[in-house]
Length: 412
Image (cartoon, rainbow, N blue to C red; front, side, top):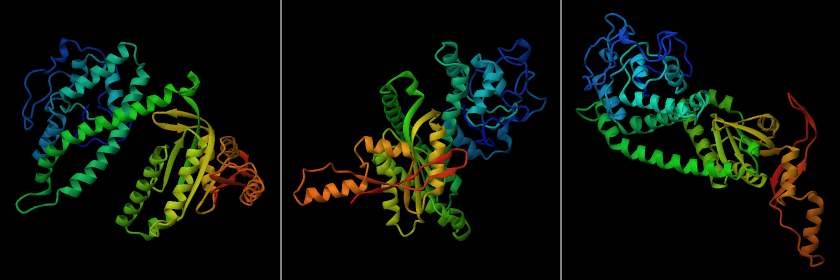
């Protein structure tokens, strides 16, 4: 479904008169509701009252108060004109009104009453999702999750693209306003961005599918053992009071970009960014340790960045809609909050996993003595460890009992 002017990214709004507001009006409408409009597209300036009792007497089209250039841009992006009210779109798709409303809201669009604001693409999207449910490929709840996850992800992408492209590239010129420049810019960028989006999505889908099919059993496909880490900028709240908005935005963008690049380059997955904090995961402890230590090292050499602290835990994680949940995630968050500046704290399970994989010695003192002996020629060569682990004092952590944090650092 397409977004219309005045809609927001808020999920599950409950205002009356939305796509699913009229209870008991689901299913295919009877003759008294008037035929669905399926003939040629209307002009966007038309002030036509939607047919059937689902429209109020004398209701005006949403185009009436809109900028004509904005309408042209919308038609360019969506590829078709506004033709349907929500009820008419549901009827044309053969989908119950209540289910159509759930899909619409799950995608993050606000209720639009009975305005004639939907297009053929909205009808097709409804039909496709409902068809997956009817074919038994998806449950109704799963179809709603598909709509919600897709809507949330693409909403952020669209906002970023508007901020980056339209605001950055549409400087007003003599004889043309910013709005007038926007149309040819969108016309040029739209096909290229669409192709690139599909390419990246297919790449990500292939990578995610590969990870799932390599799981040892069915349970691991949902509840998996992963390393989960948080990286948090220290003193960010104070920075928000001291820096100008533009400076703060640049700092956050630089931090997110640096963190995302490091996570991707070393084989982890960036789960989400929260301004001053990023959440990442990795399949093994060595990868997560490299990411955490590398973040500290990289930001320590950047004078524009505040100090960083990282917390990592290893254990069973539940994955839903691209996010991660569970005790392991909570523990990683708590470790981050108690970590000293410019350090990485890990839990005991993570430390054991790192030792088991040969990335850290059981005893730093013994490893150092063995390396010294080997260097003097009095002993055989010893394994080369990447990381060092230093046990810290056990301490109670709210909601998780007593934990034993370990200080993680790079050896040598």
